[in-house]
Amino acid sequence: MHSAIDNARRSNWVRLRTLTYLRLIAVVGQVTAIYAGVTLFDLSLELGWCFLAVGASVISSIVAVFVYPENKRLSEGEMVALLLFDITQLSVLLFLTGGLHNPFALLILAPVTISATALRMRSILLVSGVSMLAMTIVTNWHLPLTTTGGAVLRVPDIFLFGYWIAVMIGIVFLAAYARRVTSEVNAMADALVATQLALAREQKLTDLGGVVAATAHELGTPLATIKLVSGEMLDEIDDPHLREDVILIAQQADRCRDILRSMGRVGKDDLHLRRAPITAVVQEAAEPHGSRGKTVIYDSGPMDGANPKQPEIERRPEIIHGLRNLVQNAVDFAHSTVWVDITWSDDQIRVRITDDGAGFPANLLPRLGDPFLRARAPEGPVLQRPEYEGMGLGLFIAKTLLERSGAEVTFANGQDTLTGRQTEGSRRGAIVESVWRRTDIASGPQKNRIALGLNRPIET
Image 1 (spheres, rainbow, N blue to C red):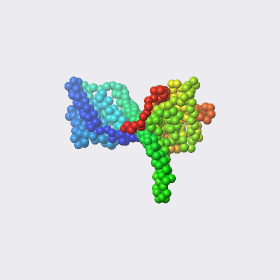
Image 2: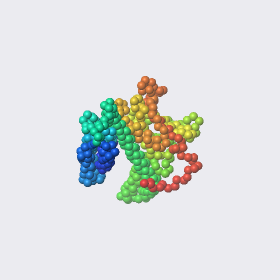
Image 3: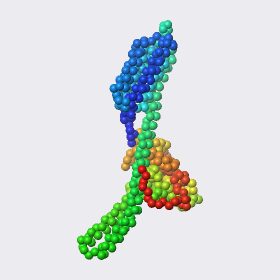
Image 4: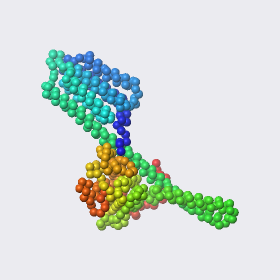
């Protein structure tokens, strides 16, 4: 799965006004450097040409401020053109002031860094290539940097060559470094947005389930009364037309009961079910994937020496959605069977999901839980999904949501994917284990629970 928002769209996030302000700051620095060079270091500069180059930058900035609106966003082509203009302007100034003998040549890295953080790869290569070409030109062809007394200021050729090499390496390294870091930050931001959307969707479904469950609970008595009264009326009415109407009333009451019952199967957030046994919560999370042609086996029990009574946990949306994603992943890759083992001790609750598939690819196992793995591994069994793409994002969402609830999530294989050595039995596929501290999700002692009272409206 590709990143939800690509770099082509990210270039439109940069405002023209932002780059204009940065350019004006650079202009102030250039004017200050020229003034200091003339007055403090007694340099002989071509002031007319220097201020012409600086003035071109000032005029373009002023035009941008007055012609375009303050919220103008740059397209990729516009941003590339702007950066190339800045590179050209800086190169002209360097040509007039000694080329690479001028230490301010290092500022060529600024437009390269900006391109690496906001543009696509081809644009980055273009900006970096032009920067390297410009620095090579001003290294070989430039006006010498002299004082008013005629002394030429220049560094030894070996240092000049080293400086040129350093600038070339700096352009390549900084572009690659900024590109890499920005891509990871953007990918993480996109994945977190997807996680929030998934959690919001699960929360809405849970709230809807509360409405359905509360409705079924509240309407149960009136529907039963209608059914009872219609049955008594049916025994006392002889008119066939009236009997048909009474039968219709009874049938519609039964229909309402059946509809509420079927809707209530997927909605269980009534106040009486805000907490449920751990096995019930796990089975609820896995229920959508229990009828997809794979056998899902549940096994629950206490660890050695633990209280055999099954703990009740809070039915949090993040727990349900996170476990659902993990079960979906196991069902997608299993050959025939998925095992869900639920164990608990006095201080921990564990849920382990295992399948009999091929397991996680060995090269991706250390990186599971990071978003968008497909960008780094475009081929292999990780992408052979029958239902959807993007295991990296799915596992990232599951891991993030479960860790939000206090779980520690680990990924492993039931067999060594390099040697093929299997563990006992047929549980040779992927293993995902979630471990919570019992105090994080389990409810307190029963004696501390207060009366629930009437169902309350869902708070929004």
